[in-house]
Image (cartoon, rainbow, N blue to C red):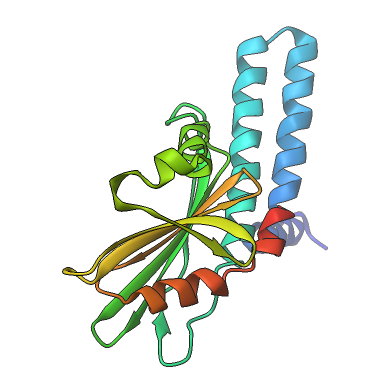
Length: 198
């Protein structure tokens, strides 16, 4: 094989390999290893930056996995594509949020799951305290063994259902417009046992 042909082969192989998907966990481990080397060299700024980057990659992985836990549309409903957002610690303390919107005729229901955010602690404290939860027209409920608070406006036919899961997640089911029954149906469609394990 001539030098020119060998060079062409290497370039082709590089392009093909670059087109293959790289596993996120490989990126995480590679970034952590690089941060370790930088730390050992005394380059603390670069090491900290890479560790922050690795943490963000882990949050992205978690958000993708949580996105798959959002329920499929109930019979007669259509579901939009689920979305995920992983924020770094610099933005409101960080956290992972996944959501999906469901539609049927004029009704719209959205499910949002939030985790890993320091801001959640104040929300969880309020939802876990019956005095705070009942304030502002909220009504205490239980969904599949989970504590929940329902706030519903009969005139506007809209409301929000907040479900606390394992003191680490808040699941919010919003309907505008939607009936109470539709909110509860989607609240019950979430697999809380699977969510608790994440």
